[in-house]
Image (cartoon, helix red, strand yellow):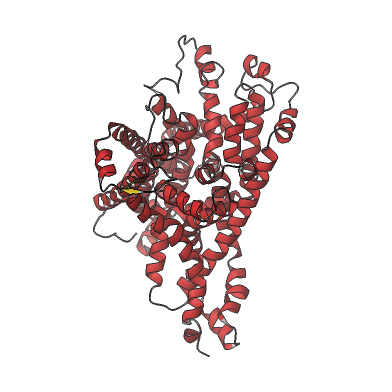
Length: 297
Length: 294
């Protein structure tokens, strides 16, 4: 590596190019830019269109240009879907399940990761392996037995079944995100704490946990996105309206409004807005968490 | 007090590990074993189970509807794997000192963060035969018989592939971009000095260096496709006439609609085996001598 570096600094002259190729370079650069922008438009356009038709009535949706902003935006679409039907109840349920599961998952995952990386025991690799293999298991292969077990325990149509399922299925990816941080903690911190007579609990709760705040935030936001968007568990385990989340609720709700585009658009916007806001505020953490949770295995 | 003694306390280790471990054993590992076991039963989900041996598994192997759904799942896997090439190209462009690269990759990621149900409902509107934006666009371009995207058995499946790929594009671009950015700048500079073209640098230096990441994304894309469910369930529910049924939706329909939980379990178990086998095969096929460590 060092020889390569000296080589590059020794010959800076070759980097400058002739005017002709620089024109070609600019054209190529411009072309690549256009490709990137087209892709960006393709990715963002459906969401912009959704926002626009959420502010229109049917007449405007059908007769105006799809990309026009309505002269008189129908914010009342939002008020209507929020007050009619159960959208506000679904929203509240989504918040409660998401927050409970995130707190439980991040705490349990931190404890396991702490024990696996910082404490001395023989089976730690095996236990870590069990969590990592959990990432490969298709949710649908567990659905029928989970349904049956929850039925026997009287947990069907009970929020607990949802919170426990979210926690179990998100533990692997959460541990994966936390792992890198815990592995790099310096041993000296623990040694000093033990010298001062600190117990393991004290080390975990007073030192490791506070130090891991940033990576816990990353894991937390990833968990939040997954839980907020989850559909199959709620659709299978919950039947009462009062316990449904937004993802399942909007599915039924939209069924009643098949022809009212503004109402449908407003409902969908309400369901994705918390995630969009979280993304605006914490996009770096989300990017980091998704990268860490996908590749390090 | 020795730090190693303090950190070897078996009781405390158990307290820290067991809650999470018991949760994944009870809610992930025991259920996958039970799925295989329920597959040996005739069972409507409510009443008594009757042991019928391998009957569910033998009828599964002869069930043309199951193989139809498996074919659709593998088709999606193929599409997803091929689209990785496109994501790789975009990432190479992005990582090549493009101004605003960070903003681009964040915009690309947005669809992946949204609920599949919301995405599905949105694309139902995009594909709407009379008022959807797609057919509006086609009409304005002079197309007369605009397709009924999701109602036509010949194209419904492919019409759903588009939003699935739309949903995950940013995810793979993000992964490739992060991997490409990890390549030491000095390697690229050295190659430039030796007169390598941008294309040569991409193919001969960058690609080999991120091969490990590419392998992982192939596994993620293929296995993710094989178990895919959400958009299909909401947009077509496997229809029309089974033309967009995939393995997971077929399992769901057999169990929770047809009340044949024994057969549904057999499908679920088969799905698990297929995912594990495919993971193993891809890992073996792409393994090179120096790296088998993931």
